[in-house]
Amino acid sequence: MREASVSLSAISANVEQLRRLADGTAAMAVVKADGYGHGAVEAARAALEGGAERLGVADIREALALREAGITAPILAWLHDPEEDFVAAAEAGIELGIGRVEQLDAVAATDASPTVHLKVDTGLGRNGVERTRWAELFERAAALEGAGRLRVTGVFSHLANAGRDEDLAQVAAFETALTMADAAGLSPELRHLAATAGAIDVPEARFDLVRLGVGIYGLSPFDERDAASLGLRPAMRVEAAVAAVKRVPLGSGVSYGLTYRTSADTTLALVPLGYADGVPRQASSSGPVLINGERFTVAGRIAMDQFVVDVGNAPVAVGDRAVLFGDPAAGEPAADDWARAAGTINYEIVTRIAGRTTRTYRA
Ligand SMILES: *Cc1c(COP(=O)(O)O)cnc(C)c1O
Image (cartoon, rainbow, N blue to C red; front, top):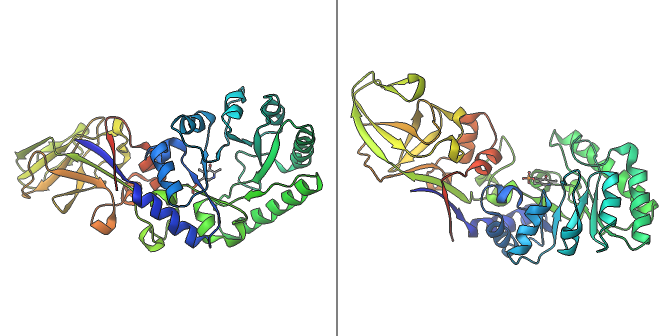
């Protein structure tokens, strides 16, 4: 048994809570990367249930998969291949983020008059049209809209989360972009800038819509504040059944490189999850594991398929459940604990869970 179980009611409740924190602003649930590892279709349905009105994904294939599953809510896809063919997306009613001026003509060529959201770079330095080309972007979009080739519904950007001053500088740049869009004759009804962190912390960035990703999965985007303090509940629990136990003497080496040696006669428990399943090898000798209500630490290197826990004299048996992370309110380690152990962020911990783990859903 290797399982990532996902609470759908937690996702719904997290959307409700985030909307409260964002003062009721309309929400797009971001379900890219297979719903941050939670399952895009199921996460999308749960988020819509919780009050999200729209969905966001990175690429068109992700958007089409949601449509094929029968999801009819508006979906925005914003990161495209250089040679992307936009016809299928336009015909499926997928809204298209425009991150390069050149994409406007490619999108306008579809004959399906797609709905677009123009993405401006207000300081993140990543996807989005650079400031020196905003006028060109808006004028070209307005011309194509006037010709009936596309419809501009949104203008958006993304925050760097570098601090309050930087956030507000991006808000100001975004307002400049909106003024320029207006001057070009565009009237986008959806202006959006904030993701989870901005939705909570930067009221000035909420505009018409917030794009909620990590928060809907019950994880905090902040280093200093955990999910519980935000009223969020982690949706994913990862666990496996202990596959073997053995008694070994003091001084026994454990796993590749023998980087861990037992400090007493002890019991070693084998957990059948490894880096092929998304457990970060960087958390060797540091990741936390809960077995029978007691917290232990990974002993030695995490391998491709398995790792070992030194459980001392605790009565651990084959088949007992080893929980890597779940809900700290239930005494389980948090994805944040694994993130710290691996020197990364909670986003990466949940998104990478895959391989041979079976995903299941619970209320
Ligand atoms: C991933 C992403 C989001 C969601 O970010 P979170 O920090 O997970 O809330 C929002 N907008 C864009 C453009 C993104 O790429």
